[in-house]
Image 1: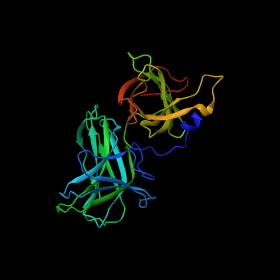
Image 2: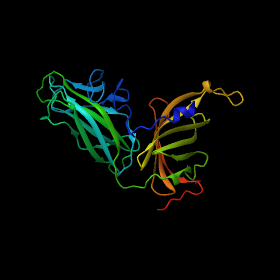
Image 3: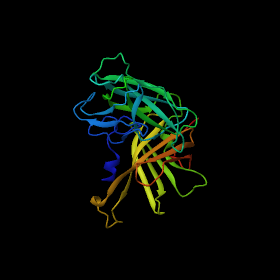
Image 4: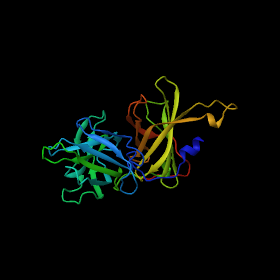
Length: 305
């Protein structure tokens, strides 16, 4: 059962979760600096029913947003974002607007990207495709995608409303050290022997990552998952399991798989890389990253820098 959970059919890599809003808006929350309302609209969407709606009745000409949970990124890399947006014509809104908030290693905000979105001249009540590319500034470790509505400056207390759908945020096609079959092997941080990462590069731009580590009580814990890589970065949704017993008392139906978070691995050469982890909110673990170096490789697989 665990293997069946891990090896699901490949889907296009997206650093944000629930960007299609097919059944809810989980993973997206009103930005703490705004007094707005963020809701799910079940009967309206760009390519399928379901969208996220941002509304605000404080019409001062500003932008009111909702934010996705921070995702790990690499400073200096260029990221692409695509989305669909519409402005509700009966509202006060001028435009639908998105922005990327850059965060440091402690997830404190360090700045923002340029804005992207609809124009005040675009027809309302129609879906419009939004595209943008942004380069992560120096010392940036995380990013937040923020979807919003640009309010009017009328001072009215009527709502300004924008809707969003099909949000994708991913590493842009650019130069970097490619993920290779030869990266299959064991990776660790010298000086922290005792935990490490096993990587297996699979067909179809897929990869398996297993992180051999420990929980908060010092018990052994394996965090593992499969995911897609875009040629430069591997990103997987990772699980932990519990419930089953040691053979011969093992029963498949006893295995309980729980989503632990996201594991991200990129390489800067044949024998070194950067490993990041982002736990799901509320599981008691903190996000972080470490450089990793090759411990083992596979005979017959070569890597040339």
